[in-house]
Length: 319
Image (cartoon, rainbow, N blue to C red):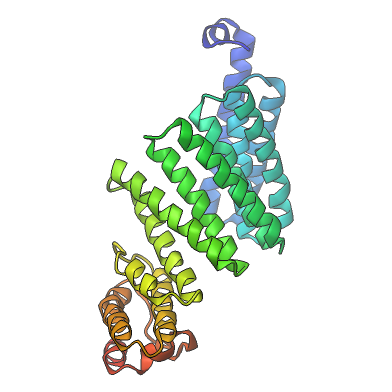
């Protein structure tokens, strides 16, 4: 492998590398410009050209880890775009290659945190591609492997917010896939661990929206899984700790978890009262996210919530 000093002294190597870098980055940025302008076909054309250059660079300079890392990153990004367009098969091939590159980087450069984090992201994206293709069991396996890699990363970097966040993201994604499979017991365990690790990352880097968003998402989905298991007191404890709501989808999921908990509470009048009080507290904050009231009161999943006079008053007043 050539060092940085050798790169500078080898004019041909340096020129080829610099030219490749420049073309690859320029084409990718041009693709971003087309994408932001709504011209998806042009964007994909430029991204494809950038990816081809990245592959050429990785082939011509196989011992440069930065080139391999960038290739895997581009493949993962391009796969995400394929997934958004409903092209799961195209995404799968890119992600399989990104996973191979990531595992090679970990094997050859095990002490580099960035290398150890890359296979986690690739495996999570691969899990999404498998899920989109209807292969839920394989998707769960891929996300579970990502979580195992996250634990290995954290073991070597116990005070790293990034390592904590990587593990928490894997655990939260795994919890979502387990919930889709209605394996709620394991989903609760996975979401609970994600809440813990996102909370620790947030403590190390307060104010970072990525940790706040991950914590909200994991806590809300933990409440949903607990409601599915008929554990209303834990739903209440989980929802009451929400630091806030940012999006309508978060609001709907939170209210549906409370509605499920109300149904599960049955004749426990005191618990039902506490759950309804939490719903009354949460509903105005839900409406502040831009949640549309029209049709909200008719959602079957809200069950008894919409029959309560205090809840109905808030709904009616929001129209």
